[in-house]
Amino acid sequence: MENCVLCEKLNNLLAQAEERNKGMVAGMIKPFLIDCDYNARQTLIGFPAQDWERNPNGVIHGGIIATMLDTAMGITTICIVDSLTPTINLHISYLRPCPADGILAVRSQITMEGGSVVQVRAEMYDTREPELLIATAEGAFRRFKNAKPFEW
Image (tube, rainbow, N blue to C red):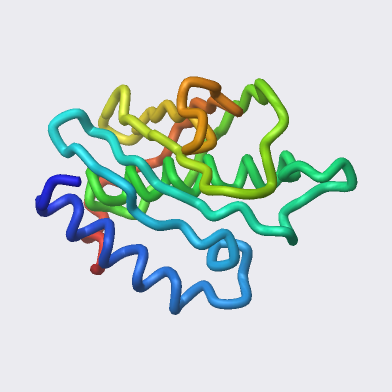
């Protein structure tokens, strides 16, 4: 992980979110920074798989996968665009069952920045098998004109 301003922003955001989101799903999924690259407009956010996230089949519930993807994409957008950017839409493709142990990683990359919309693409995988994607997502996030910068 390169030591850069984006990494510092991400670590600050995640530390604040951990405290602010205690008892909420956003805090319970425990996102953490694995890597970032401001020039590539991308981040790699990790999530520890946890027992409570399982569905009756013993794999991570699809709704939790969606939450992890949306969270990672939102974190990427907030840090790179420097503004709170709520999700407008999110499309997810589930490719394989998600193991309920280990560390899950979501690589998110901004693919387009317009005046009021930021588009992001993400891929989720188990860090033990990074070549096997679990899910992919594409989303649009709203950037508000004249919004004050995000408070770190």
